[in-house]
Image (tube, rainbow, N blue to C red):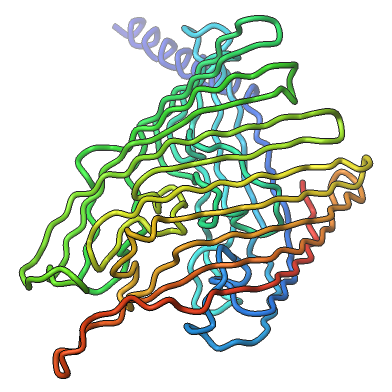
Length: 417
């Protein structure tokens, strides 16, 4: 009995020692790589945009006082960690990767007291051809962005697509040595922008998740092939209104509404030669605020109906020298005016059209330090539905407001690691 007890003790100790050795062996194969940049921007605007250091459109002078504004913004600084681990034994040639990324553009009470913004957080398992991603990352649709110093890079003003939680499958099919098809399919979290935080409106999570897909053709050798992609999404949203009267529709009872959101998107990246690259995107669809389109207007809160919109952007990158890069671009977002009858805010205002043009000059002093100057012009059309006056019998009226126009100058110093 004593001998059996000693054998059992030694067996347990041996198993624990083997497990520790195995764990240490795996840990030795895991690499952790921090990345990011320190970013400070000085911004001057000839009149007000929607957010100043986070601009997407120009505000109508009928809605704000007209004066020049200046910001100094370090909140776009970005930090992340990539963890690379050995793959699954049953999946030959596979890898496991984990990513977490944040910046400081979250909600803040004072400009010097900002909050963390969760950008990415996902696990990816895959090999050279197939990847499975679980977590929050950029959407499968409209994957490109213009090279801008402005933090949103056109989100809400013509550049569709954002980050959201998802389960995504990516598969690359090599047709020839220089030709490949890439397919992506994702089941994504429902997200909403319209009505968030407004009194009398409750946004609900739909019972059906958002589905996204993209098919892309690439021609040429990596890392700069010609790529043409087609993508889209379909999702559902729910909103509860405390009263159904709104600005236009009659009635006073509580109202529940189900909405659909869908889009068709095209993206193009064309590296013409070593120093010139053209890229752009186009989108069209319905209820697009959740993908940063429709000038962030998906639902007219007056009529309680969805808003259709079409837009996109085109940009050119010129690599002048090893250290100097110039970028030029145009963005546009054009919601259908007939869908904006009651206003997309409780005040009855809505944005009917926006466009912007930009050019920037980036100088890379070395592989880490960059300074850049960006000049852009922004134009946004506005309208407002004035409420009926029941006392005087004055009917409601749709009024065109003065458009917002501004010039924006942004100087950035960025140190990447």
